[in-house]
Length: 68
Image (tube, rainbow, N blue to C red; front, top):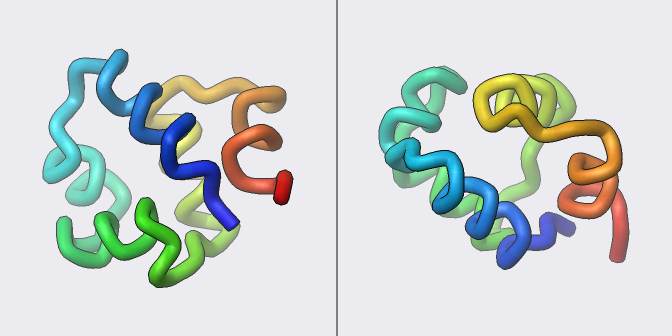
C-alpha cells in the first residue's frame, strides 16, 4: 500500500504537476490519481519511473511503497 501522504508531499515539493508526472510515466492522470489514492497499486516499473521523475532515493521509496 502506498503512503499517499508522503508521496503527495514529495510531489508538492517537486513543483511538478500531477498531469506532467502521469504523462512522463506513460499513464493518464485519472489512473495516476487512482494509484496515488490506493485504489490501484503501482507496478514496479511505475515505481521506478516515479522515483526517477521525482528524484526519490531508496529510503524514501521504501517508506512510500514498501511499508504497511
